[in-house]
Image (cartoon, rainbow, N blue to C red; front, side, top):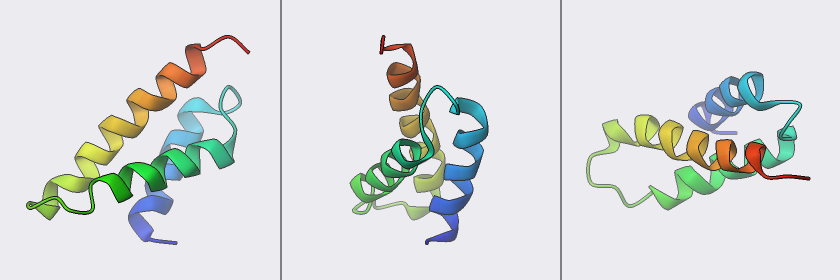
Length: 65
């Protein structure tokens, strides 16, 4: 697993589990990094990925089961 994906998954797991399962968090993080794969300025990708993934997970955590 990519170290950045692994680190962000770990960070967001601490924030969102048990409301959002680990596999969902990991999938969101991977999808987010993939969506930013064509970014021109690579140094901003981890910051943008963290923000985007956290926003998606917040929406998921608020959604009624």
